[in-house]
Length: 317
Image (cartoon, rainbow, N blue to C red; front, side, top):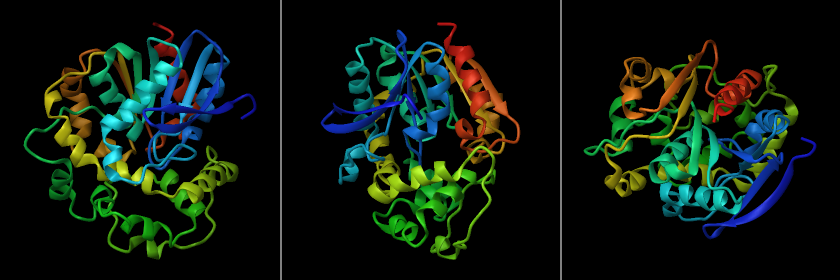
């Protein structure tokens, strides 16, 4: 990680930790997901900064070394996108390239809804854009389709998931999350974490013990509440976003997903992508890449390939 500069910036009323490398005229802004950090983009930061891009990766609100407001209502998409817009403004650029994954992808889609003028082009991963359903709250949909054990439903009650996570060594928990390759929807029966064997597990070649140690050290410090609050504010964000019902994404987009990712295999996402419905809602979608044999944490699992996909797309602008 030599050469990566760390600093704290004040954005939208909170302190945000930012990792940065490169001095090029174009900024690539990376947005991470759950349970991750700026560190999830380490490979892309090193590679793209060496090619003339200024790479910027924050710990999002509630994560790592960024501030973690205690109230769930401080985690709506308006708060989080507000943080990102303030960060972009602090960089002294009118527009940036955005590269995002998982919850970061959701935030990136909404950033493009709210302020498309800020985004030169978007490379998004794992989570597709779907227009707001006006008649049903997100958590009601999740529960109706997959039941109360669906992980997003299980995350709703404040303190419950945190208490279950606390029963497991943080490093082991991070390993279980990052190496999960089950394409089926993530179901977490009550007390399910209690039965996780607290034993060593062999890591894949793309993930090291040092990587796990970094993630674990930050979550041991901050806890998981900040990240879980994104899920807990889902319904509130849905209510607040009523004025954007039916709005399309109108920035140039490349989308990347793994065929073993549960997000690809749930909620008819595969059909949504390949039927043309995704393109209808994202009319400037230029490319969809489905990587075979790859799970959810695609930007880490296939870092060189993902980096090349990013570079080949953004160099056109």
